[in-house]
Image (cartoon, rainbow, N blue to C red):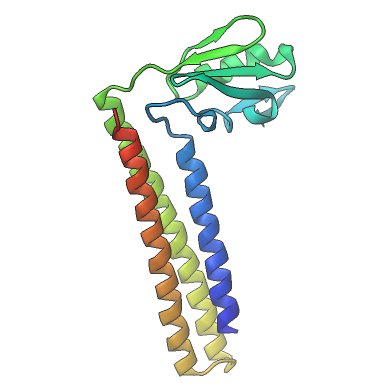
Length: 185
């Protein structure tokens, strides 16, 4: 029973890490990456659709992105979504595709991005701690229902804390890597 809870903790905490990595991929660094725009929501036939479902996104140069929509009529909608986003990029529309030129980041903008990274890291830590709290409550409920002993409860809580600490350390490592990437000139 305790093993099941620990396995559940691993899976849910791993999901939090995965969500963090996906989230951080969208934060701009010095070089162009399709992850920067692929989750951008575009109003397409009345419903918000991720850009990755509407176009191919390529990196022709280190500081440029090329977006080729599958449906040329969606070009204007994609352009509007990019302008409305917090990316701070101006799309260049040539009638068939959109080119995004990424200007070099200023020191001030890098520091702002590092703050955004720190906020996302804290959200991931909170998500991991919430998983720990929920599963610790489950363990306590099992002990109240006499499904596990008090000793098992204590051992289970200790193991759960070790798993939590391991995932929090992983969040910190990911954060350090991303911060170096953002500050790299």
